[in-house]
Length: 398
Image (cartoon, rainbow, N blue to C red; front, side):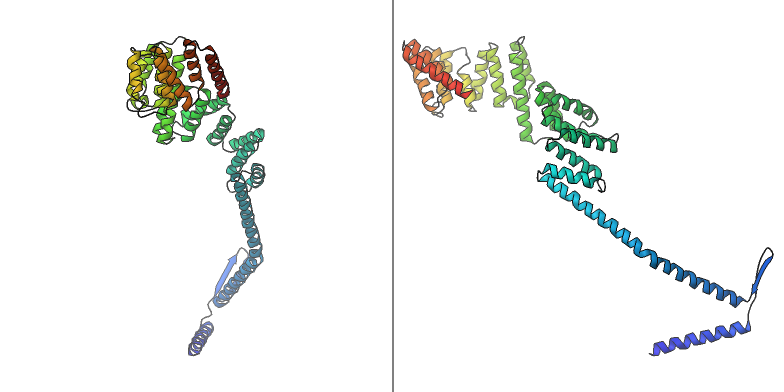
């Protein structure tokens, strides 16, 4: 109360002093422009300026009061439209990840125009269209994205390449990927798709040259890469050994180019030894197999050991029989021992081993070999039965 009274007293005193000043010193102002002139007291001029200031302030506030609600309305409407569209985009993405391709495509295409990320919406819609079986529609959407971002078609190119790989159109995929490989040699998706493409084309030599990049840029895990490397070298060994003009020296030379750690891979060694056998290098194959099987057991290699012909068949048989104590239930070992016994002309032993192999696991090859033994013993009826069983098993396994 006292504070308010003090303010009133101060304002009254100031007003009185100002009024007294106005009566004592009126001042004078003359404004002239061409043939026109205006003269007034200084205090009248200040009064006019004050009135005009108040007028403009009131006018400004009045305009704001009139226009602000409209602006606020349109702004809120725009925000609501963006939010509503974003909800549509989210719904479309959820439909996509749930595998509802048709619904996802429809929603994403509808919301793309007003989306904050329209190209992403069109791209996902294209993939959804492809998954839904509409490849033409997918390509149309991808073309739209390409036109929207000229000069940077990596995203759409990768999408097209993935579609080609899925459709096993490997030549088309390669045509798309090769320019990207030149431009982006370390791009992991480009490298992964190139791997799938070369594998689909069975272009093992190109895939071999790609192995360094796959390793350097960690496109696959160490275990996956080891599997891939093993596959590549195994297929290349097979290709060399089956070529008509191939010679054993070609196969041996390539073997020495294979990294040492991969030469210890069972399937790589298997293909190499099988190739040596095909190219009449069985004695060399037997030495390799014997060295490997001393430390590492593998049924496939044991089976192959019974086929390759070492320099001394009896020594080969004795060495193979040393595995019986640790592998008494191996059908492949029994089959290999039966074949080695046959080569050593130990007919009774060969028959016993082959019958043991069949008892553990009936195999077409074991029956055929046993049939030959029965023929040697002039047991033609039993031999015929073995041949029939062998043929039956072979047809069943094809």
